[in-house]
Amino acid sequence: MNDADNFITPIFIFSLPRSGSTLTQRILATHPGVATASEPWILLPLLYSCKRDGLYAEYGHRVALKAIEDFCESLPGGPSDYLGEIGELALRLYARSAKGKARFFVDKTPRYHVISAEILRLFPDGKFVFLWRNPLAIISSIVETWGKGRWNIYEFDFDLFDGLAALVEACRVAGDRACSVQFEDIIGEGSEARQRLFSHIGLEFEDARTAEFSSIQLAGRMGDHTGIGIYFALSEEPLDKWKESLGSPIRKMWCRRYLRWIGEDRLRIMGYDARILLGELDSIPTRPATMISDLARMLFGLLVRACEPWIVRDKLIRLSRGKRLHAHS
Image (tube, rainbow, N blue to C red; front, side, top):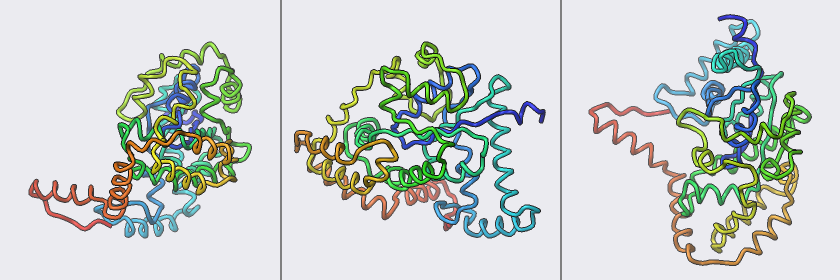
């Protein structure tokens, strides 16, 4: 490893899925000093090695955690040495991905939301962008993009609840270390939000250059390929498009409860007003066309979350291939 492998500053974009993080990533990557990759995800398994819950593995994760904790006690600096090496490994990988052509590397991995606080501690010299979007627009985008118009929000409870709570708390903790920005401002006609984004990182801003974000190609299977195919210019996203998807009385009821769960304080940190969002939701004409389907899929979602049928599916696939079944823990 050479010295160049150590010279990189990570930029983390923290957001929920369907918040415009791929667009923001591509805008930042228009600067010649910024490198990126589609979605690295590398810190999730590394940092989850220190977590008791959230993993389901053949090797017995909770037993492994005890072993890791014991090993960390043998290190001169204890657990901080272990975490520090994880950070150094990530920096070396970012630098090698950048191939020595950039000073910054954007890691945009939406599910970093649940480890955002750990990432803040792990990279004291990092740059942190908290990207927010109207929660109702996020729900609509999930339904339309991944559900093809059908209610599928139960698949993303982890993001919408655990993820959002973790993001808001991390943003509180980050304080001045974070740049908090709304998606609606990023795509707006004015450049103030984009300029603030570049200024926070310490890069010169050129509005004409950022407008060329569509030329940034992100290789890999992860990331928002839908958005890459749609967005060729800023200001193309109608800000009230979400209203077309949430007219069902069942959907409106769920969204109303969700906004109340988020609460005024968290919404204020995100840059939104709870009363305005609730008023906009109530103003949508009620369209009962999908009501029965929505109710059925919500009940199905309860079953899915309780039983996790894909685990049974994987066991059946393993059995069909003549392999032995093992308990996971």
